[in-house]
Length: 326
Image (cartoon, rainbow, N blue to C red; front, top):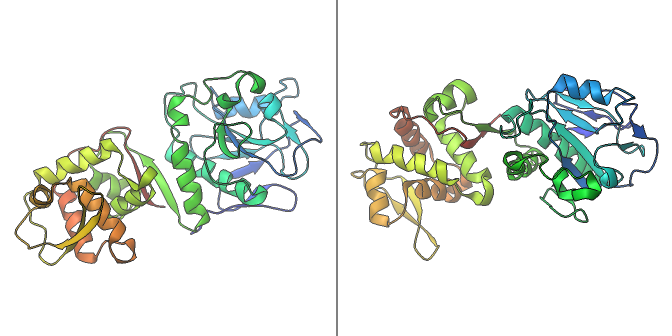
């Protein structure tokens, strides 16, 4: 199922998203640019009910175009394309859409997977309508996804909004928005450190481990496994004693940066092969995911990977972020 949304003729977001529409009294009737420069990432410093009440209170003098709860529920407070200006970031208001994200008062907690997906849906739809690129910017004269804090004093002097943890999630938002545009129902999950990758994949994500590994390799920033995830994968492979089946084509990086293909002889574990090829197991898995025909693991490779992780009870570290088929 596609997660892509669109704006209707009246400027309200529609599509496969849990959204409700409410006209905030806190706005200017005219003055918004014909095309927005991008979307501003805010954090609520509170909960969804309080934000909704504030934005619908004419005495608060505060509003935004969107707010997103931790459960992925979205409120839209102003239609787009009608000239309305929200009161969210002062001098940035006429040129930028604004999106508040629930944090329950703790900005050190990352946005939830469902929250990230909903924000990415909003970002993609706004980008499609107004033509700004799906990219990160820290420049108020640039275009794309920017934070409230990037606007400095002119934008209300909130340098810590949305906080370093949530600001660091912008690459994920861009990746998810691009996947949504490409018609892929891809979501991201942040591990809590309580399940192995195998149990997380089967119980929570309803994906095979091989699918998770492939999608994470493809959609992680730079196409590389983040270091904590790579360390986890290398540890699991180091502990596994089952040989890679004979005949599987494995791709691995060389010291000069090139990628070469070799065929498994059938009498070596992946850990042993990584020693022979002088690279990490995680690098072999990533390169094989990327360079196999169609950028999809062969059925034999997928089966091998699923088996390795089914034998491991080691918990995926808290904070590690993985991608999966929604």
